[in-house]
Image (cartoon, rainbow, N blue to C red):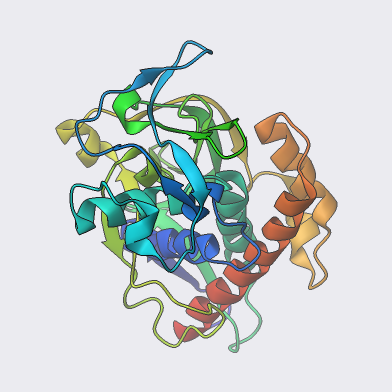
Amino acid sequence: MYAGKTDHINLKRFYPFLACLAEAARFNPNKPPHRAMGHAILNSPNPGARPTDLPDGSAANLVVLGEPVSHSDVIGWWRSAASSPVRSKLFRRIQREGYLLPILTSICVALLRDMYTTSPDGQTRHRVRLQFGSSPISDFGIAKGQATVTSQDRLAYPYLSDDTFEAGQDPENHYWIYFRNLKGQTVTLDVGMFTFNLYLYVSGQPYFKDIHSVMIPPVSAPAYFVDREMLRSAPNATKMTSEFSFLRNAQLQAAVASQNTDWAPVFRLMKAISGSKLTTIETRFTKDVVLDSCRAMMQVIQNRS
């Protein structure tokens, strides 16, 4: 690749790799496992179960939990499951709950750092940019809003062992990634809908070939990619209320440009998106998955050289 040249990557072909980065982040050892995965299910939240009204006015499918159970005791975790596939799917839905903002942040920072803060350097490096259709991507970031989810597809967790209650992932406070090209066309990538029973998967191959920075490279991952073609065949599952650009955030660009990332602007942006202070676990997890995603992104770009 010669100096001054730009290698454009088709977003519609590349987004499965981004979805697999999200999936890899979910299995990062610093992501705390959902508590429900270690307690026996006492009721029968099988397909067709009716949702229960909650005190806040919402409704959800209850997963009533009892005494602790070993993670290796799959059958003992939920004995009344209608079938093994039903049990497996509920487990995977719960496994993918939470920490969506740090995961999306890791993807956006990796794109910003490894595609949009580098420039050509002789013949040894080349500039890589995303495009959608025939138009380059001119903005991307995290969108915030509501996801259209039925009460039956929401989960909530009462724990009888200590009389506590945990709300599941909230579709009224949902996050996804948006991309906008120079023509003004906007497409979105949502990797957080599987826990709401939206069973759409994509293959991460061949992008994870020779990627060694990810401990267990996923071969597939949940993803919901929405472009004009998708909107013609299905209604949009989300309604955006605000968006937060990563590409046009000058402070963020400066923070991630060097080898020693300045984390303060990253965490400030995350706080602005969520509207709340990050926990110690969230900041630690964010650092881990950002670094993992950046290493994987860099290897993918190098493999294109």
